[in-house]
Amino acid sequence: MKPELPRKGSRILALDLRAYRIGYAAFEAPNRPLEFGVTSFKASNIGLARARLLHIIHRVKPDKLILRKTQPSSSRNTIGARKLLHFAYTEARREKFATVMVRESNTRLYFRSRGATTKYQIASLLVERFPELEWKLPRPRKAWRREHPNMAIFDAAALGFAHLAARHVATRPSIDAIR
Image (cartoon, rainbow, N blue to C red; front, top):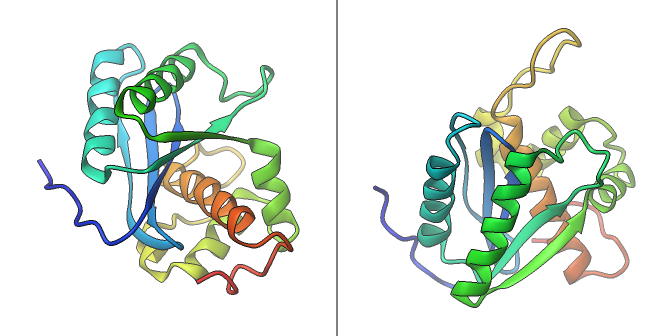
């Protein structure tokens, strides 16, 4: 079990919750990366998923939890993902830290305005900003292949970074302007 991360400022924890995987990205204000990761489990084992989510939350000790608000028609809107989302939200209320729901479309719009339209382009842009993520970046996906598990890390990081960027600067700066 990893120890709690030492605290220097306010923290956010962005989560990419799926029925079988949790991607996470933790940032310290204004947007210093703390930790990125992904954990997998069987979709039928909601107890293990909850335990792993609790471990991440208790390790990072965020002041704010950033969650993706999915459309009902989204492929991410599965029963397992909804259960995890509800659990994360309930845990945040129990631990008394803020929760922010960010629409998928807002995250995509933020990165589209910076020329990144595909998940791989977004991930590459994040690697430019956070070089410590480079070793986690998988090769571009072929259409017939399944998505690499590490893309959940980049989905969480994109969600958190888009939230931080929108919060700190109203004029939509370049990705390098926010440090």
